[in-house]
Amino acid sequence: MADQEIEQAVSRALEDAPQRNFRETVDLAINLRDLDLNDPSNRVDESVVLPSGTGQETTIVVFAEGETALRAEEAADDVLDHDDLEELGDDDDAAKDLADDTDFFIAEKGLMQDIGRYLGTVLGPRGKMPEPLDPDDDVVEVINRMKNTVQLRSGERRTFHTRVGAQDMSAEEIADNIDVILRRLHADLEKGPMNIDTVFVKTTMGPAVEVA
Image (cartoon, rainbow, N blue to C red; front, side, top):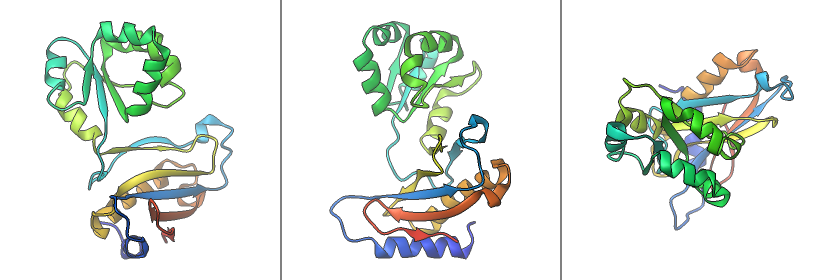
């Protein structure tokens, strides 16, 4: 459960957001300090499962064949096989469109080498190489978990953003998501909380509110 200060900051962000005729996302802006981000080992690159979910549709594409492909069709947005992979390798524009329209990729381990060969130059720079699927993994469980997953990725920038919910979620649910993200960063950064300068929460079009 998140502390009261986080929940109060989220409540203010939701209350201060102007009325819009669409459902806004709620985003977190994290500003880092005292890190040399030119060194890739210092950059943030994490997948975090949000306990209250993202509040948004997450697009997931699975590369699989046989029984795994059949199971994946229950939960994935699309399932592609080896032939599809070869076609994408020959069509750079289609591969880029797929990468841009998809939040996460999952792939059977046996296809990972070919994915690297055909799509590595498209997926790699976007940070979207697939999560490998072990033979004993339940593909539907993995898909459902990833639907509640967000990426924390700083690259070389001291400020980066991530989705933490949607405007119609409760302040408590969004605060719990923020708490999980901050705990992960505190655990993973070299100096823990000392490497975090400021954190702000805001709706898509609303004002930013500092999270204590």
